[in-house]
Image 1: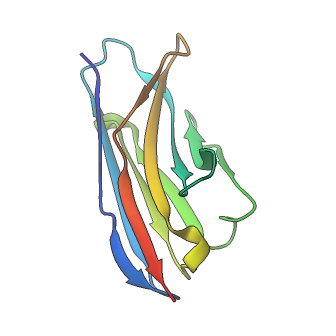
Image 2: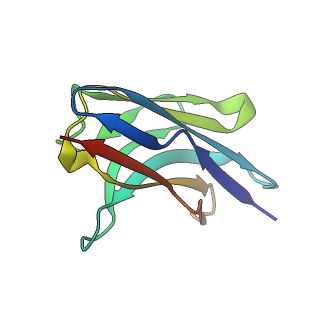
Length: 116
């Protein structure tokens, strides 16, 4: 059974930094991509950043220049370093792991709150 567990959320002031971590485990198949999504209250879930095998990354425009995604493929972990946080970054952040069959596995989310 695949498990995806996020950690690292919390309360931070505007301009501060946080690092989110995600561990995926239990898959027979390797994960071809791992990424971070977020969902603010009353809004749809949106992509923040994704990293695929080989290290190619893709960021939402709102994350470019402020957030950095990194992955340890050997350990099936992915991290999201978030700098210069803004109140509009407040959301529940979800980790998604996708295997080569394009099956997605999601964590339960970690809350990030940025105070103004």
